Structure formats: structure tokens, C-alpha cells
Length: 512
Image 1 (cartoon, rainbow, N blue to C red):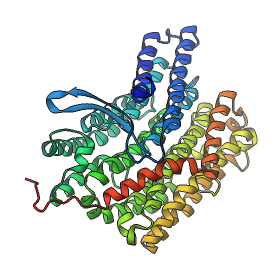
Image 2 (cartoon, rainbow, N blue to C red; image 1 turned 90 degrees about the horizontal axis):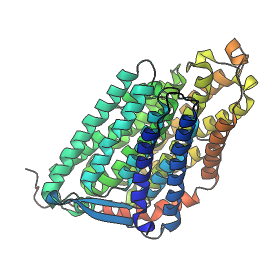
Image 3 (cartoon, rainbow, N blue to C red; image 1 turned 120 degrees about the horizontal axis):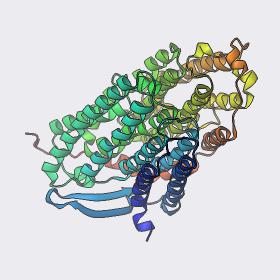
Image 4 (cartoon, rainbow, N blue to C red; image 1 turned 180 degrees about the vertical axis):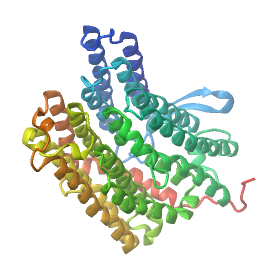
């Protein structure tokens, strides 16, 4: 019974938890028994959601390329809209990442949120449900509803609990992503007129003229490029990260950026394969600009959060590079490797960037500063914290043995099969990543203690230690043993490449 509706449970359980938190409230005092009950309830809902999501992994058949755990119920019958859910080898790991990260965010914000904590935790639980909805929706309109609804809790998280320029940051975030999404809706409406429904598989199977494919791809590109974010529509991300509370930064970097990459795989590539091939050169160029140029921009940052934000943009450039290499590789012999590398990079980046932002949050909670210049010698007073931060910094730089290496190495190998210069430019991120990450680590953790505030710092408490230990173990496990994750992807990716390699052009364009 539960297995038949597992995806619905994963979507609506955290949303119900969010409503429950609003009803419980915090009693006007963060130290009250009411506030403690609210926090425990928030953690219980997120942990229960995570436990249920493990059922997806246990019950998932790696040999089956199609959708599993399917639910299909009529929703708006007039327009042939369905409540249609299902997962494959690409969406399952992203749902698991979402359910894994959210409890850690709740634990991380346990004591640090002083104003309206009930609303804060409720926003995260609602956001979790909506993000799982995006990864499991197989109806275009349902996908769009979850995609747009997701903006509301994140808008509130940044706008209410953010820093001094939070209103500017949250409006910029909202407008960029909303305007991009409107074009996606236009593409969906066109496809609806061609198929008579919003079923994503109907979209994938209909023949579309080349002009229409190009325009649909560009509509999807705007929506997903903003989300990744790709250069040059990346400028909202550093602002959003800097102003967002620690939990908001973690969710934004770990999961919400992956929506863009997921959109390319789920919509752009299978629905308009010929349009994707036509613009593959553009996508590779934009990805390499993100990898190289943004890497240099990260070197110039004085704010820790901004540096990690720009690092995220550079690392996500690997994701889009791996996805669009297949047409540049002769006989497609490395296409699967590039796509697998892109997917591994998405999961790995989710863990590493989340951990990096949590490390910054630990320091910010103690000194209320994100400026690199305000620190120095932190390792003298916080040795345990320093050990964790160095590990995550090394993973961010792509050290072998950590998850950061696996995906990047796969994409670099695939890009070498396509073009030497692609591989050369992609590999510069290993140098640049090491440069800006180690520069930050050296300035923050090592050297003489030049600040009295640093001398007064206390090392990690039990709550912070648990969160960082879990993430450190995940980064090392994925780095040393990526096979379980890769096995999830493989069959689905092979099927996707087969689907994409078959043109779906009409003899005569149907674009009017």
C-alpha cells in the first residue's frame, strides 16, 4: 500500500509537517517548551521523510530504464492534466539528496534562529516537499506548479531571515527565476497544442519541426540556465547566498541549483533532441566560460559566502558541459561517461557546497562576520572544525578520494574524447579551484591569531559535530565507492542517450 503511494507521501508529508509547525508555533520565546516541541516536530518530520525515501533506493530496479513507483490520477480533466508521478535512475538520487540534506539543515538552525523559528522551519519543510515534487512530476503542468511554488518558501527564507540587503537579494532571485520560468510555460502550452495533454512522454514522442525545436530549446534554456545558474544569468546567486541564512544557502546550493541540470536532462534533451544538438556548441561554450572565468572571479572574493557561491557556478559548469558533450564525441563512445560524470557531479556538489556553507555558518554564528580578513589562526582555537573545513575544501578542489574528484574526472575524460581544448579548459578548474579554496583556508584557518575575537572562539558543539561528521562521511564514501550511485544512473542514461540520438524532425515544420 505504502509503496504504491510512496512518492505522494514524500511530497505531502513534509508539507503537512510545515503546516503542523505553524499550528504549534514557538510561543513567543525560543527557549519555551512550545518552541522545543516545534523543533523536535520539525526534525521528526524530516527524518521520517528521509527514512521513507530509503524505500525508493531499496525498491528501485537498476536494470529497468523506465519510470518506477508510478502514480497517475486525473487532476484537471478539462485540459487533460494528470497528477502523474514517477522516478527513474536520474530523479531517484536527487530525491534522496533532498531528503538527506533537509534534516541536517534543521539541526544546523536549531539554536541559531531567534526570530520566528516556527515559520523558518515550516518554510524548509514545505520547500522540501515541493522540491521532491519537481523531481518526481511527469506531467508538464504539475512540474510547472511545483517549480513555481518552490520559489515562495525560498523567497520568504531569504527575505525574512536574511542579511541587511535581503530584500534586494530575494527580489532579484525571484524575478530572475520567475521570468525564466514563464518561457518554459509558453513552451509547455505549445507542446500541449500539439499533443492534447501535458504528459511529458507525450511531449517526448511527438514530432516537432526544427524551428519549433530551436525555439522550445531556447525557452527551456532561459528557465534552466537561470536555475543552474549559467553565465551570464548567474548574478543573482552570489547576492542570494550572501544574504540568505545558513540553511537557505545550504538548500539553495545543495538542491535548488540541481533543478536546472535536472530540467535539461528531463525536458530539453529528450523533448527537443535536434534543437539540443543545434545549440550544443553554445552550451559547451557557456559551460567552459563558467568553469574558467567564474573561477578567476572567485579568486577575487573577500567574502567567504561569495567565494563559495562563485565556486558553485564554476562546478555546475561541469554539469552542463558533461550533458552536452555527446554530439562532439565521435560515435558517442564517451557520451555516457560525460552524462554520468555530470550526474555524479550534481550529487557531489550538493554534499560539498552544503558542507562548505555550514562551515561558514559555524564561524558566522560565533563572530557574525563572513569577511576572510576578519579571521586568521582559527585552527589554533577550533582544531576539530579546522579539520572538517580542510577536508571539505580539498573535496571542493577535486582531491582524489573525495566525491569532488569523481564527477569532474569523468567529465574531463569525456571532454578529452570530444576535443583536447575542451578538456584543457575544463581541467583548469582543478587548478583554479585549488587556488581560491586553499587561499581561503590559509587566510581563515592558519597563521597567527591576529584577532582577539578569534582567541575567544569555542570549538564545535555536539550538534555541529554530528552534522559535519555525517557530511564528511558522505563525501568520503562517494569518493571512495561511487559504484552504488553510478549503478542507479547507468541504465537510465543509456536509454536517454539512445532516445536523444534518434531525430524527431517532421518533414515539414509545424511551427506557425
